[in-house]
Amino acid sequence: MEHFFYKENNLVAEGVPIATVAEQYGTPCFIYSRAALEEGYGAYREAFDDHSHLICYAVKANSNIAVLNVLAKLGAGFDIVSGGELARVVAAGGDPKKVTFSGLGKTTDEICMGLDADIHCFNVESEAELQRISDIAVGESKIAPVSIRVNPDVNAETHPYISTGLKENKFGISMEPAMQLYVKASKMRGIRITGIDFHIGSQLTNIKPILNALDRILTMNDQLVSKGITVDHVNIGGGLGVTYGDEKPPTPGELISTIKRKFSGIDLKIVIEPGRSIAANAGVLVTRVEYLKGHEGKNFAIVDGAMNDLIRPALYGAWQNIVPVKKTASIENLNYDVVGPICESADFLGKNRSLNIKPGDLLAVKSAGAYGFVMSSNYNSRLRAPELMISKSNIHLIREREVVPDLFRNEHLLPA
Ligand SMILES: *Cc1c(COP(=O)(O)O)cnc(C)c1O
Image (tube, rainbow, N blue to C red; front, side, top):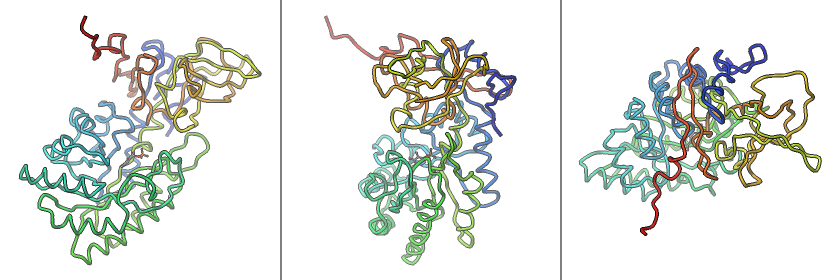
């Protein structure tokens, strides 16, 4: 169900007018729908049904503690990539025993945090990391649960910056060396092998590459069993795409039912790490038109949101729908580049958008619930935007807009 929709020409979130939220909290601002988040998680939960599983929401997609708390209350696990994310999960009431720790550069401190929190599994990306985890665990008289992230060398058919499962990517370990590493790991004192893991990329709109990767991983599992090495789970990563424009990705239900078929007769828990497919369409970025200007046959809508708030268009050339918060029929549509005030030509939210707007109007950039606020910065000394969560008829401020002292709170002048 769509939780951002028009009611008498006014865009609403769960029935709450976006314009009302913008009046109260100013622009730019991120607005999330609790119902949309719950539905995003629920789609996976229902699809797994009674097959043994763990859904670890990828915290990096949207790490606000209120977002994590909504998911934790539904029983979600979490996939983290840093000690900071582990701290967020704990602060949000998440269960560390349902945490998978991904990422290829875990520091000693981060490994200690994970061990102390008794997390579900470390997803290991190199021999050196495995050795470090084992040494730390032995030092603490603990045994670290690990899976090895295998790089299955499949083309995920997505943007190169978010493709992670090819030989030339920095992620994971190729199949042959991974086999050898499993054998080594099975003899390490601080290590308990619990899984196999892969994650081939993000915004995947085709199920095939995931299935190809899974086939390879299941073959590898057979080889491990023949060597006497058994795991209790296979982690298929995240990466399911969403509809920003005209993409038609499979639904979580379609993905999971296909995956489950591959596991028929195989008694292994399925772990999955979805981020974008839970959060992206649960949020919008609301921005106000400051000025309209035209030159050289182009029209620019200069808005108060910018690449520091939402960097996906600038970073990946990503397309996100931009819609008016109030639909009007009076003036004619023009084609606009919707741009921010930052001193970079890459500072745009959308190009060549047919809009019917005047200064002061509000626009909503759709699908901004994932990789939106989390990638924001203070570039150009801009204050980071607030985050609001709509829950039925309530508006909750879940992160305040920054204030000017925040900008240089941690800076120091040289001594006089
Ligand atoms: C980013 C990431 C995810 C989540 O990816 P989405 O495309 O947001 O679902 C899951 N697992 C790992 C290891 C990741 O790096």
